[in-house]
Length: 116
Image (cartoon, rainbow, N blue to C red; front, side, top):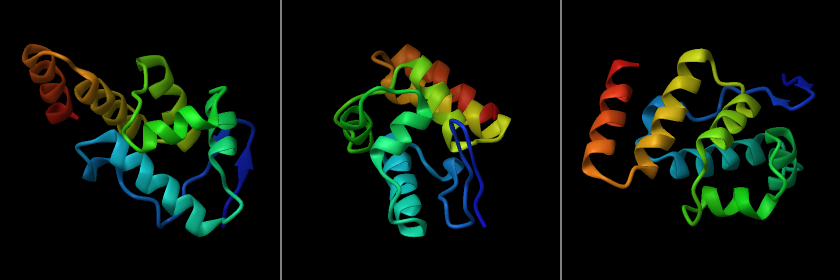
């Protein structure tokens, strides 16, 4: 069973676990696929609306690894997915790790992930 509230999407049992991923793009792509499998009418537009993002195409490009989420957008997406506090912390750290440009930044974010 699934219940929707404003700007929130409730997870279903078949949703992928964020802790199983080292790339947030792959996680979001799999998450989106699982949502569409459980409810065929679910769309990037609905996901974007619930995440507070203006563009469904931006979210699609993020899922395909062609664009990156900002730290602020990662929080919105995590909230829309309804991550637990721990899942949200992991997801945001994963976004930071994947978006890091230097080895020093990657090391810091990888250590954050290990502590979660």
